[in-house]
Each structure stands twice: as C-alpha cells, then as structure tokens.
Amino acid sequence: MAFLIPPSTLESQPFSPLHSPPLQNRMTSGDVGILKSTLLPSFGIYASLSLGTYLAAEATDRVELKDWLWPSAQVLNAWWIAVGRPMHMHDLPFSTVWGAQSWTEKVLLSCVTIWGTRLFFRIAARSLTRGKDDSRYDAVKKEPGFWKRAFGTIFLPEALVLTIISLPFTAPLTIGNTTLALGEDALNAIRALGVGLFGIGFGLEVLADTQLELHRRERTHLCRHGVWSLVRHPNYLGDTLVHFSFTVLNMAGMWNPTVLLGPIMNYIFLRLVGGDKQTEASQLERYKSGDPLKYNQLVQWRKENNSFWPALRELASPWAFTVLGCGFISVVVEEGLRGSFEL
Image (cartoon, rainbow, N blue to C red; front, side, top):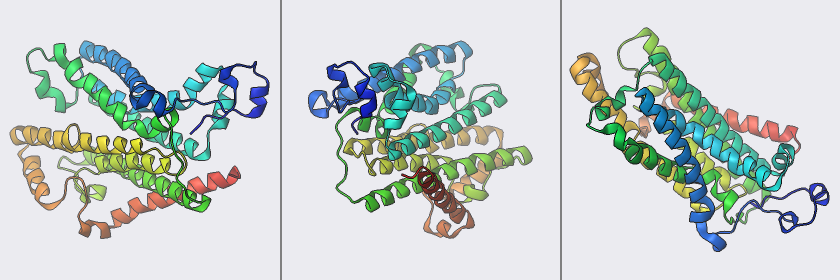
C-alpha cells in the first residue's frame, strides 16, 4: 500500500523529493529486502521494549511482565508503522495521515488495537489481583543464574517471535505489495470474511476469559463448561483465529505473501512454546502434588476433549453457534460503519 498524501496537502508543502506524489511510507522489497525494510525496524522496537520489561521483571522478580508486553507491544508497533512514522518522517498532522488510510487499513488497525488492548488489560488485571508471579514461571526461576540469562533466553527470543507475528500489519506498509486482481465485490467479501473471522476469534477469547473468571469465583474444580466444553484451551484457539484474520484482511487490498508467516509463527508459538503445552505441563505438575481433584479432572478431560481444535461433534454445540454469532455481528457492525461513512 503506497502511503498517498492528499493533493491539497502536497500543494502547501515546499518542493522536495519527499513531497513528490505519490509519497510512499515504505521502500520496495527489491531495494532493500524484507530484512532491512521491515524485520529490523520491528525487531528494534520489540527488543528495546523487551529490555525495559526485563529490567522491571528482574527488579520485581516477576517474569510475567513479559506477558504484559506481548499484546501492548504489537499495538504500539502497528500504530507507529501506520501512523507515527509517516507523521514523524513527513511532519504531517494525525488527521492527514489517518485520512490517507484506506478503509481496509483502518479496519485492520482497529482490529489489532481492540484485540491487543483488551488482552493487555486482562493480563494486567489478573496479575495485579494475584499479587505475585504467574505459577507457570515458578520452576524456571529456581534454576541457578536464571535472571542473568533470562534476557537472552526468554525476553529477546520473544521479541524476535513478535517481529514475525506482526508481519500482517507491518509488511504491507514497508515493502512492496500487490493487490489481488479481484473485483470490488470480491474484495468486499474477503474483508467481510476477515472481519467475521476476527469476531469469532475475539468473541471466543472474551467468552473464555469471562467464563473462567466467573467460574473461579464460585467453584474450585476445573472449568469445563461454556466454551471450555469445546476445547481445553479456547482462549488460545481464539487468539489463533484473530491472527489469521489479520492475514485475511490483507487480502482485501494490500496483500503481500510474507504476511502468512505471522499467523503461522503465532500458531507454532502457542502450540509448542508458550501456549497450551506450557500451561498444561504446569497444571499437571502443580495439581499432582497440591490438588488431586483437579489433577484427576485434568487427566480425564485430556481423554475427552481436544486441546486446541474442536472435534466435529463439538461443532453442533450451542456454544459453537454462539461464537459463530459473534463473527456475524462483527460483519454487520463493520458494514454498518462503512455504510455510515459512505465508503
């Protein structure tokens, strides 16, 4: 997507190569490649934020502060790439930069912001209420010299992972892209699909977190009702769908194949590193020694329900239709907003 400045703005600017239309907010991949144009700038942002978070985490002995950074850093990077950098580079007001964004780009940036902001406050509130570090990190902190190597083994690698995950909302704005050769109706349908997928994933995350919180206030056994009856980790499934929705939205107007790496990396991280695998390993260890009831429930639950992707029989559940309804409502809201702006 070329960042185009309205002609009225260009006329009021003194002539320079920067102000020659069309003004672009990126370099082409042929000039410098994705490493220099996209990955290194994002990694620089994430690495700097990770360093500050690491210092705060070491001072407070709370590894979980990196979890606060995970969603908030992605939102900050998205806004910097889409809005902050062109404002800084070309000395433009926010209204001009925002007005130059296409509707699909505004939808994508809004989805990233809604998802990341909600998740940040959810993680922060849970952390403050708990008053201590997440139990998932208790074992690793007992290792000798943990904090001396934590930045290089945990915080910095996660900054690299975030760099890849963020590609759906950084690559199209920093390297060359190609709009799919489709008609307007087809592109609108693709955008609706992306918005619907976002609504499904976001709704699943919100329902999972809300139901789990309410369950913990009233009961002591494992939460296995609501959307938790679909899979053992509906929140991670929702997060995966949200990140795939960012890629689908790219196809509606600023497609670049590199964005596929983002949701794939997010899925790999959730499945093999910091998601359901890490969570259940921690639960099994803690429950086996401290809560035999939950341990037996978890062992049985692992036999009955899938961890991440729902079994076909679960698709007929009322909760599956509820989640699909979230996607439908999202499409209706997006279309209504687009219509109100006569786009």
